[in-house]
Image (cartoon, rainbow, N blue to C red):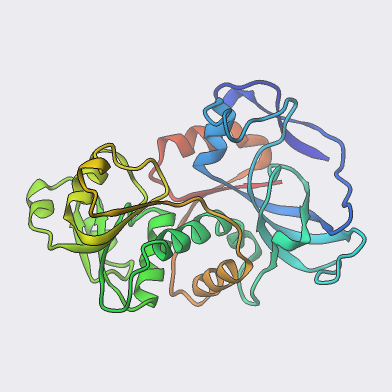
Length: 301
């Protein structure tokens, strides 16, 4: 098969399209012909060597963790999937024509959802859902989602509204108009000091941004409230012992992925796809992804 192979850590130019041995499904695994793979920030971080301590590459290595495609083979013991099933998943080594995955971490694509569009969803929608769920908000609570215009943030906003919460979307000034379409009850510019100062006490914050604004917003969380983040905890978290700080590490959950994907299919949640490129242009995809601001980028083998 053709795959993007990495022989050393470095910039986007280390992503090379090469021949690579076809994977073979073992017990409990399925073999998928990849129709599309999604580019995520973690892919760029792994390529650059910034995750060596907890998620290293073993050279020569494949890369990528999101995919959608069609099952073309199954290993012994697989009962839930058959050849021809359209599936998507969060698995390793997805920048390739073929991918092997444990059947336990694969989901069938909901009927009516486009196969290529499905590749954009696994990591970001599950992460957004789990980020919001970690706040443990209840119906009527007020939660602020930082980075609400990103794919993770949009997923958190949708999950919060589905839970009956009052949702404040934190975005940049330049995003204010577009943010009115994502379903939040209120939109606040996080780069507007006056707007931040005027915020009410919050039951929770779901943070998909980190940095300075996270350090400011933790101070807006009421006693007993929660600050959930998929990034580093705010550096000043120790000054707010009354706030429960919860780190969130995304993990596969089939029910959550199917639920979020159905919401996208039904246009209740929009995850914008900004660019589709052939697999051979993975380096360009990483250049564009690291610049940001264009929505999800898909690679098509």
